[in-house]
Length: 108
Image (cartoon, rainbow, N blue to C red; front, side, top):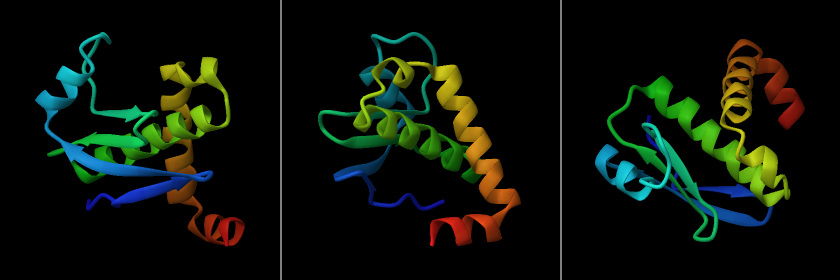
């Protein structure tokens, strides 16, 4: 999947960039675990690990967009809830995939 160059969240333009897995892990060394994406709020950048399968890229991008939406809307505590964000990302992706006509109608 080709990543978009940017995504507009509220009035903030987030740059989207592909980075190596190693670079992503180095920038997230204060966090525990293995990361495939991150959102840098102050710089308004969403970083996605390159080399993943298309479906993984899509779900990771949706996951990071949800983090950015929560941040921009002031939901700081919810923004840090990885299980909730991941669950929402998977649910929204499946909703869009299984109901494309509904999504086109609702979002048009």
